[in-house]
Image (tube, rainbow over all chains, first blue to last red; front, side, top):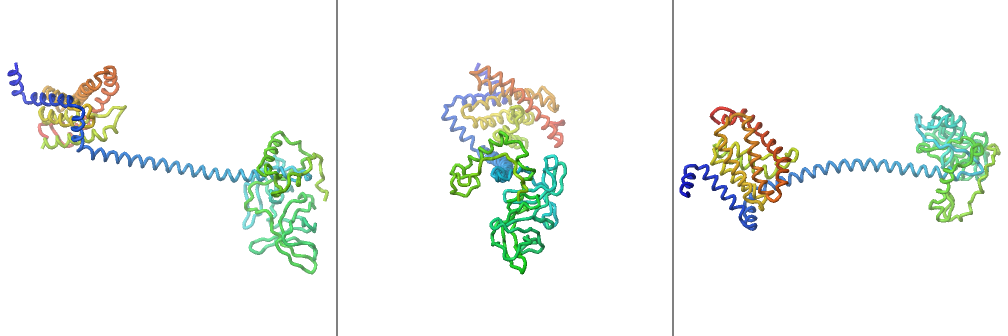
Length: 324
Length: 165
C-alpha cells in the first residue's frame, strides 16, 4: 500500500508537491499559538514597510480630507461670524431706537414711524436720504425725520413705498432753532467751505452780544410748524462777534453718513389708538434693563435716583404742536 | 524569464492584497489577487510551480492573521493543484474560459478557507458564501478580462492566443 503510494508520488511530481504543501499547511495549522505568532512576525517583516507606507498614505489622504472639511467649516463659520456681527450691530441699533421711541418726551406726544435708510444719493455731500416707507405707511411731505441723536431732516418727496428726506446736511436746508439754555433763536443754514470739510453749518440772525456760549445745545424752536420743538440739532462749535450779528458755527449732532434707522414723525400720539399689548410688553421688558435693575431710569444719568427724572404718567390728551 | 515574472507578480499580488485590495471593494467584496496570479501561473508555468507559488503566497498572506496560519496556504495550494489539472482539458486562450476558471477557483478558495474559518458557525459560512463569496468571485473573474486585454496588447500568446509568450 505504502509502496504503491510512493510510486504514485514518484511518478507524479505535481501531486507530490501538492501533497507536501498540504501536509505543511496542516502542520502550520497545528503549530502552537506562540510558534504561529513568531513565524507570522518573521514572515510579515517584508510586508511591513508596504503596510506602513499604506498607513501613511491613508493618513495623508485623511489629513487632506480633514483639511478640506476644516477649510469649508472655517469659511462657513467666518460667514456666520460676519452675519452675527451684523445682527449684533442691528440689534444694538434697534435697541437704541426702541429705547428712544419709548423714552421720547410724553408731552410732545409724537407718533413715530420707524424706517430704514435704503439710499443716500448725492454727489459730494449727502443731498438726500431715501427711506423704505412711503405714502402707504402714512408718510407725507414735510414730516420731520429723527434719530435718537437728534434731527435728521424732513420728508420732501413721497412715493407709495419710499420717500426722500432732505437732511440738515443738505445745502438747501434751513431750520429754525433755539439755544436751549438761553432761548436765543436763529436759523441753521449750510455754508460751503467750512473748516475741515466741504460744508459747515451756521446759525444766522443771532443778534450781537446774545447769550451764546461754546458747547451750548441747539434744539429746534418749533417755529414754522415743520419740526417739533426741542429736537436736538447740534452744539455750538465756535463764535465770532460782529457789529450786528454773531457768527455761530454749529457741530451737528447727527452723523448723516452712518444713519441706518430713522423715525418719521407721522402725527401726534393722540391721533393714534392707545398702546397695544405688544407695546406694553415691550415697555415692561425695557424697564427691566440692567440700568433699571441698578435703580436708575432708562436714559437717566448713572446714579440718578429712580424717581428723580420720572416722567408724569402718560396722558393721551392731544397737545398742540404749534404751542411755540 | 517566466519564473522571474511569476515570482514578481506573486510578490506584487501579496503586497497589494495586504495593502490596497481592501480599498477596491464592490458591495463589500474584494478581488482575490492571489487566486488570479495562481490561475495564470498554473496556465503559464504548470502545476508544480503554481502549487509552490501558491504555498509561498499563502504563507505570506497567513502572516497577517497568525491565528489561522496555514489556512491560506492550504486553500491556495488546493486551488493551484485543481486549476493546473483543469487547464489540460480546456481551451486556455478563450477569455470566457479563463474568467470561468478564475470564478470557480475563487469560489473554491473561499469555500475551503471559510469552511475551516467558520467550522463552528456553518450558518455564517453559507451566508458569507452567498453574500460575499459569489460577488467576490465574479469581481475577481472580471480581472480576467483585464489580463486578457493586456495579453492581447502585449502579444502574450499563451494567454491571448498562439504558442509563445
